[in-house]
Length: 121
Image 1 (tube, helix red, strand yellow):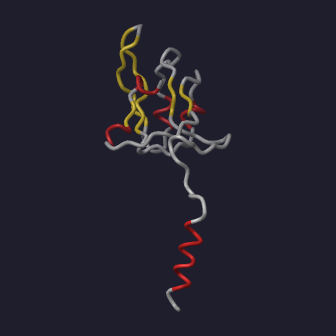
Image 2: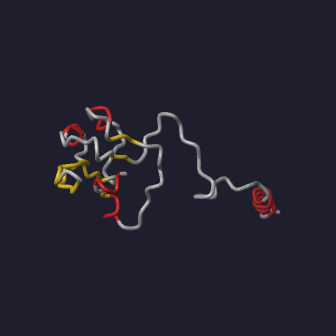
């Protein structure tokens, strides 16, 4: 008699729809103030390094990057350390570094969290 109640609960819960989404086919809607993966417009970046200086977690490092006009210092971002605070976006004078609504950045290898400027398009 004691075992009937738990079994009845299991049967009742098995009839309910799943509580999780079937990712990536179904994606959860994000709010307007959501901050996701960074996006960099390499053409408008002036290599001022303001984003690297203001980052509280030292997530952004300025690295040499080949562009149409030669080698420039551009931000490389370690998403593993990022707080997604958006200070880098706020301080950017040319608004070339923004945070998108993209939240699909899981990886198997930790090295893939380091995004070079070319990867931030």
